[in-house]
Image 1 (cartoon, rainbow, N blue to C red):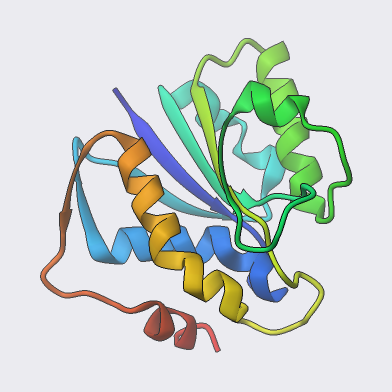
Image 2: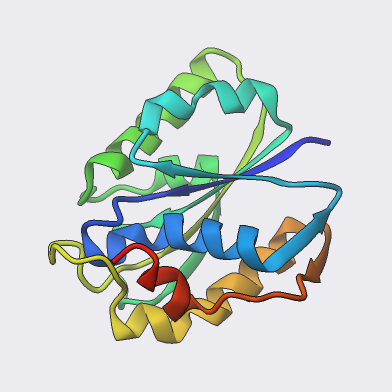
Length: 169
């Protein structure tokens, strides 16, 4: 089975970059068997639709806009995300929903799971994460690794979240 992790978000808008930072952290710190493709999807949105045909499992990491406290973590199958009503606070949130709807119409068959976390601040123009998301980061990583349901080994050389963020500043 071919699996891909796509980290979404705009790293220039503080917590909105969590998907990108999480995907990069996974890539830098872990070895996956069978192999796992990990990409920075940034704000590509609908441009990612081809991955739905190419891969069996698509795992999207992003923020989510639901009425809950910042730092709350959600793991949702795509149909559940589509069933959520409410405001979409970022352009790529709208694009993800649009992409999922188009994939269904085009009969793209990937199994899609969304790993999401509620941001505290996506309006601040700064590369980084709020303390709330930094405090939840290791739990977020652990949940993602568990749900990927493949063999995971830590790399000898590790990078911390702080060091990863610093590379973008």
